[in-house]
Image (tube, rainbow, N blue to C red; front, top):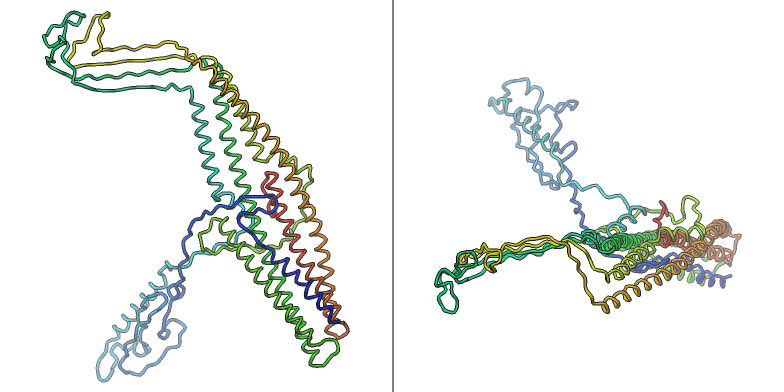
Length: 584
């Protein structure tokens, strides 16, 4: 019968190996793929140590003198000076307690102490001050009280935090703002572009005449010598603008293309949120698997300890059921279980670290997670494959993004096709010049480069005739459009394949989980019966080892299968583009 322990030592280790499989590696997404989680965090206010002795009913080291206390009769001796009470935790010095006042002392206005007359007023005053000081200490708010401890995170809270504060989501949000700005730029493409120039310069030689275009009236106004006369400065300002009136549909197409930017940015941000939420669920379920695995390992250790004690008792009785070799085997088994326990603890620690990163917790901050069984409390059947594919077609953000990109490329091709046509618009201009050393000409036929005032409006037609370049740009836009359409086909096929794969894995995990759950119930009854028979001496070691091995193996398989179910639900929600339902 001892040779059956060999099988027990080998097979029963499956429990520890399966339950310690909660290895969550940041960056891996398990079912359905994923990306590396970002590392963002905020630092919460550190908890201050709690201070005692400053709240509640106060602290007093002297005898009680309040109502209901027994009066103490003291002998007429000199009162001792009471020492002050100090609370070391709060750092507050409490005034000394009042001395004991005998009833007869209070009633007698002039008590005799060592032949001297002592007034009871100082005693009453000391008691009143002590009472007031104690009330003040009791009413002082505890400014250093520890803040309320945050409640453990649930799955929904963790997923929401990851979808909101992950660094990839922040990056996608910034990209969305950029697309929105580009859309605003496309909407205002019709706005005239005002080109204005303002300047001032000099020196300018003297130029004087009769303001009607006649000959110079001063000697310095003649050119050809170095007599510049009274020099001055010139100032000028000119500008122009064109308001598009008709562009053959190019402005409308540009606005349509720009409107797809925010749609594309929102889809990319939703994809980042889905990735962060899935990784949060993966870390959460990995923690639950490691936690339940540690519980199962503790249960196994307890049963091994009971078996070792029973074998030791049988050895003392020199029972033929066991031998010293059985003791060595059980001891070896217990050490192997402890080794697997260390692996499960490491997996739980890694899952908690990933949870802290995804929950935007400060480095080193303790993160608590609610304890939850991997088996769902409600009966939730996975959706059919057709339903999952329909959801992916409707909600997958990649399909929304590629559709917006195709619309934008189509608008670009339209713009390139209409670039051969000119643009019609309303143009305006002005030119103002003034020179201090020149006479302004009043004759409209006289040229006046020093003092000019002109302005006007008119219809213009603007275009270029670089036909070969426009042909190349049109071919490039059409090629980009065809490329996006081919990518759309690839994305749709990839999504269908991904949804089919994740759905099949979920259905298989669901079937295995239900089967392993029923098998575990049977194995638990088997183990109970085998241990009872072994304790009574009617059962053999072989029966005990077989029952224990089966129970250990099926317990590990059950926990791992329910882990696959819960993670498969989260993966199916990600690949279909729908957020996980509460409890999934």
